[in-house]
Length: 89
Image (cartoon, rainbow, N blue to C red):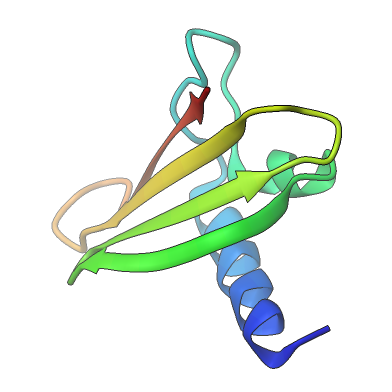
């Protein structure tokens, strides 16, 4: 596994542990980053979009769509990590 892929995996795993739950995926039951990783979704891309927000793109070999998770980290909020995931078709 490439070093960049390991770093992305580590970031996603840390966010998954920190978030616990995420927003809806097109009005389906709550999906969280940890569950996406457990279900075989792989990180297709990651970008730190703003100073306190990151975007993670997931792909799955059995699905023809992607899932994008926007993760806000704000120490002034409770919970401090606020993820929102949705399908990109």
